Amino acid sequence: MSSYRQPGVVLTDRHFTVPLDHTDPGGEQIELFGREAVARGKADEELPWLVYLEGGPGFGARRFVGTEAWLGRAVEEFRVLLLDQRGTGLSTPANRQTLPLRGGPREQADYLAHFRSDNIVRDCELIRPQLTGGAPWTVLGQSFGGFCAVRYLSAAPEGLKAVLITGGLPSLDAHADDVYRAAYPRIERKVAAHYARYPQDVERVREIAAYLAEHRPESAGHRLTPEGFQSLGIMLGSGNGSHQLHYLLESAFVRTPLGIELSDTFQEAMRTANSFAGHPLYALMHEAIYGQGKQPTDWAAERVRAEFPQFDVATALAGDGPVLFTGETIHPWHFEVDPALRPLRETAELLASRTDWPELYDPERLSANQVPVAAAVYHDDMYVDTEHALRTAASIRGLRTWVTNEFEHDGLRAGGPQVLDRLLALVRDDV
Image (cartoon, rainbow, N blue to C red; front, side, top):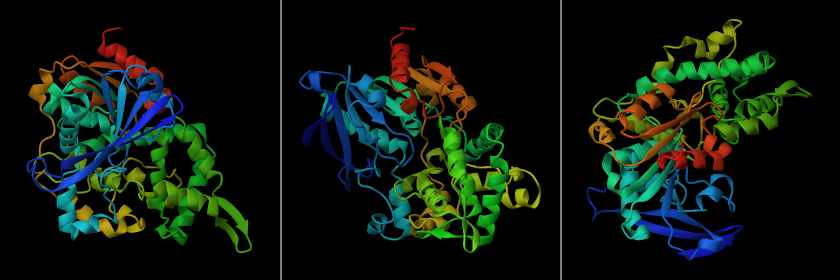
């Protein structure tokens, strides 16, 4: 354990040991990493704890510098633990380099089956007494972190003083098919809004997609395909994503001695945006987070996409309609084009076919909830369905919602102190 300072905060790096399988506490152990942050003037005070659960799945906790964004507001009254969930960041990372230590694809898939919200919550409950002396703490869950928070309310509410959720209320019973059946129309609306803002992008996108379909270039081992290009639509779910996408598109082509070609600038930007090297669990576990019961997820986003033929790039190019972007969907081809995922294709197939996912949520317990809960629901959220979120909100006793279109899914990052202030006021009945 080591401590050091940044502007306005004292940081302490903490390491914890937890079972891989919590039903076998004496079995294999894995290491978790969390970074404690406390205001410099309060480092020696007894403060309540807040644990932050990042979105994803597959992302480690954000690395703040000093009192950036919402952290500055949080350390005014909390000692904050920025937890890298198992398999992410510095918490026994799971990726193409480390997973072969488990054995072959079957062993890897069995290992990763322990990396969902149920075990993330069990990890938190082992860590909490070590930090708080047994006192309950406040959870702040962003996106998938909110899914974990709802699991926490279902499984271990005694460990919670309050729950704050931003863009992360999951459906309690929707299959992955239902999730993506609701997602594609939302994505289409975001694409329509982008093209209305930047009509010049309609033809530019067609030109790029046609070039990729004909040439299939590679960038640092990453195959650049029309479908991969479409997936840049994931940018449309953030506050300034439409503008950033437009700027990316305008750099697509350059004139060379051989004629017009896709620029190195664009190819590198597309490769970077499409690479899962830094967060492979996002691709491996993205549909698994919805798995409950005996029905496999079975590449739900790919199968459901067939119900929305307007997203087929070849059909769009054969006609005169716009090429639609996608986003927030994982497909089998991701494991063919991305060198960070290619060795894990069979592992992904085994996870997609798995039929023994434990139930994640307890509707009866949630309906009797006594923990103060507040949730920011972003009305135009591209990543989490608003109707599903509000249905879940109504199922959790006492949950107070703040429904807003002031922010997109990244509201906690963009709105920072304002969003956290609002949620804290809601759980304290100050509004």
